[in-house]
Length: 258
Image (tube, rainbow, N blue to C red; front, side, top):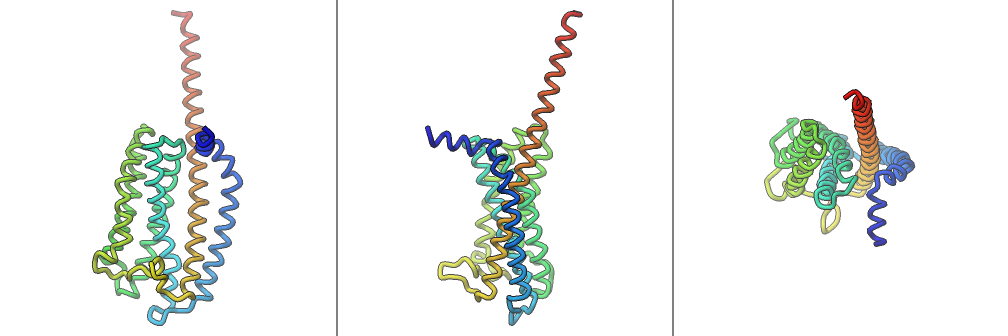
């Protein structure tokens, strides 16, 4: 019973609003500090690559953006599972809020990847397995947002978006292992490896600092978007309640005349 009450408290939108009222600005401030430190390390401390020169520093934006593009969709899948299985009150709010943020980071990864690819590969785009799978991820984000916009029934839209979110999660292992399964222009994993990172600490440290900073920024943006969605739904509920009260008053006023 105690565990149930804790779960209910955590699932309460009012509790969520109270918690994020102070947590969101704190998280945003931490994100600004960490990202500023990461960009300083990337631009002024990290050495140029012996092959790529200064172009390698695009990596400090591209790689965290790609990671967060994938993390955003994983968050949508988890939230979708919470909606369909546990009927969690905030699950759909979380999934809906994460979609545009994840799409933005995925688009940033695609843009920075193209800018990085031009001097390295001689072209902005190739139908590489990694690039193509990330592009599909971006289209999945757009599909989720379009599906919600196309349906007036929010409950139905939430359920259908949740199903798409769960089905689409298969793209994440494809993105992750595409460099191992197919011949691609992308290099194999060099940070998350069983035998340790394969890049020098002078590059690894700024990369990880930026990844942490971008992740905290994602969290702050996600909390803000969830708060906005909760408020929007409350305003909508109040408007519907007011319409129902007005209709009831009209019926009551018209009753004696009949």
